[in-house]
Length: 627
Image (cartoon, rainbow, N blue to C red; front, side):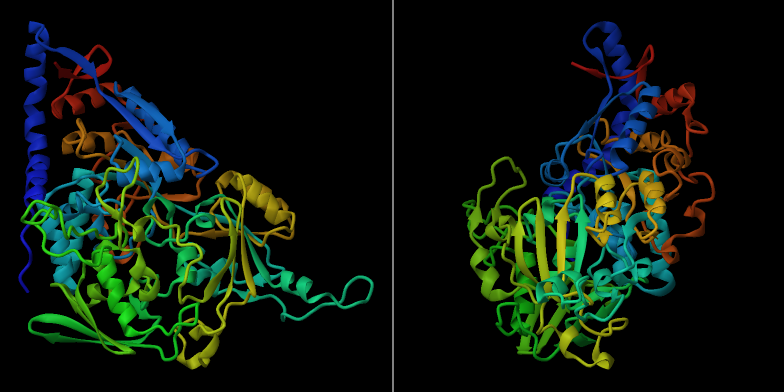
């Protein structure tokens, strides 16, 4: 299948990104001449590191402050700017208003293809977690495309080279994979130790500690139905209020992950810890090759309905892929660079959904064959990669068809948007195992099992692997609290069953002292990174970014920030299968080794490294010349 050529805008950015290193290599010498002549003056290199406050994340601010000290030791005027997570995502993912940011990635990268939307230059102008760095590298593009088209040894080799090139050019610096630390009460529900609570399947895997029956009260009377229901409510304490105010799976700045929306919306398949895709809403799928393209015939489970009682059909699935590709559902013709139409009026301009583009871009077309069957045609990719497209949420056509009008967004600069991208989607109409009951924005959210979901209706032998029956709880109640410490206190006091958001390592002693509370440590996590704006000087220079990475001493971060509850890493891929042996952590970064020892920067060696990158020093200050 013939691939589309890169757009004009992408070509310009690729060439600019590749030229950045060569231009910077001579900038230092020319700058010094101009400074001596008085034509230009020296300006200290400044980096503003944006991140979230301590009450939103137990580690990010501490990481940013340590980076600031390492950068300052090398002569950089580094500053830290904390802000709410919603505002951080708005500035970084939508408006690109940043030099560098510290954050936890929104999800685990299990396979090489999960890096495709994060780094391919075709997504340079796309908002969201699609290439928020503005990174453009022709070799990386080719490797990303190769791993999509190939399998076996060829794909493994492409993935290994890809990770090495990323580590060398540093669009972002991977810091560590933290352990997710939670407090959980085992007296009402069990299975906490094996549950991945960053995923909707984690909540569905829990079991009740005792049968859900009414128990006698202290005076010998029978508990009321309401009290019995309270005992069967799974109570979650969280520090993230956004899910209580917005349940739109497409809202970039409101989504840290997909645990809540994944309970409300089904996908055709789900991704396992091993990186494979297994059927979920789909009963099965089968791939074939038609006209040199891979086509999957997907059969839906029988009798599926939306939460409002409307039947869920293959037409909804086809609609979903159309919606993700263009939320106006009427994009019409467009220019090569995705701008206005040939007449210049902007009619028919496409507005793709900022989220899920890496997966939805695998789909060339989807067509309903009958109510339970949909045929999905893919772009040039291997079927094992193509199946990742089945993990996007499926949307009800009768609800989202009315959200296609364009709207203006004050303060956002990423171009046109539609109602589908900005609605808070409350109340949501999904098909997932839980349905919406009520919410109080920034305070609470209540969901309950959907009685017509296939988990509740199908015999165990017909359910997805690892799922035996309906959720173990009759209600899920989410309560927003101010900090991780408070969340732990709510659990140890018996007012919640689990801390839904991970808490910091500093809470471990508090959890350990509570005899009726379990410490839950889960190493299946997304990494922390420091991301760079490769469209903004001096970060356009890959050698400058490479030198910044050499100012990071990961073992010090693991000791001082994570208190040992993390693993230093070089690659963003979380599955050991895909990380080549030469990039696995063995005590030191094999690509960008630390400039110094035991967490202390060697200032003279750092200066020499930055001089090599094309910069100079004015005393202790790293400078660049400016008119």
